[in-house]
Image (cartoon, rainbow, N blue to C red; front, side, top):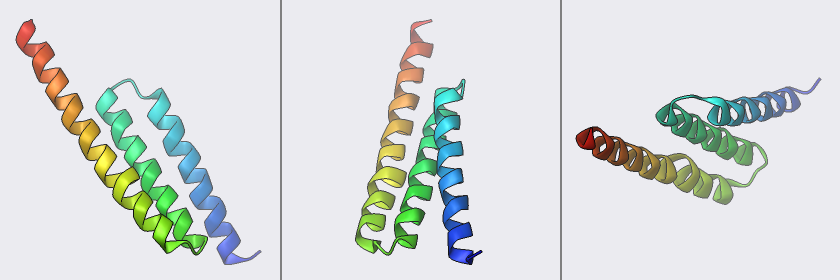
Length: 85
C-alpha cells in the first residue's frame, strides 16, 4: 500500500474519532477541545490534499479562533452560574 494512502486513512479516522468524542463528552470544555482537535486534523487533511490555502483558513478559524471563542464563552457562562448559587 501507498504510505500517503495510509496516512490519509489515519487522518480521516482521527477526524471521525475526535468528532465523535466532541459529541459524546460529558463536560462541555472537553467537548470544545475535541472540536478544536477535529479542526486541526481537518486542516492536516487539506494539506495532504494539496490545498494549503484552505488548510490555513481551517487552522486559523476552525482550530484556533472558534475554539478560543468557545472556551472564553464557556468560562464566562460557568463563572456567571457559580456566582448565582
